[in-house]
Length: 137
Image (tube, rainbow, N blue to C red):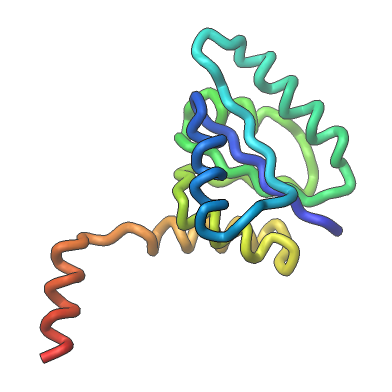
């Protein structure tokens, strides 16, 4: 079964994070973004997502959303579907990691990868660099 990534965000964040990922990993396939524009009816947004998912009902889907409890998250959550997982807290590391494993893991495993990447991608940079300096001595 083929897997897809859908990116659901406020404004152009989804479009731009995919563009940023492509600067690092090259052209992506099987990734679709949905941008909630200012003043857009949330149910119109949901309808766009549902239409796309209906066209790909034979695929597993990992949905990465920007903000837990935001409209993109709430609309994604309101879509009943099997083999469909949703993770909030989208960041570039999460997108690159899940994309690189998109066709080799189940959607459930991709969800766990996204969550692991999210928890491991933030660092106190100054502290980490100081630790690395101390190791070199």
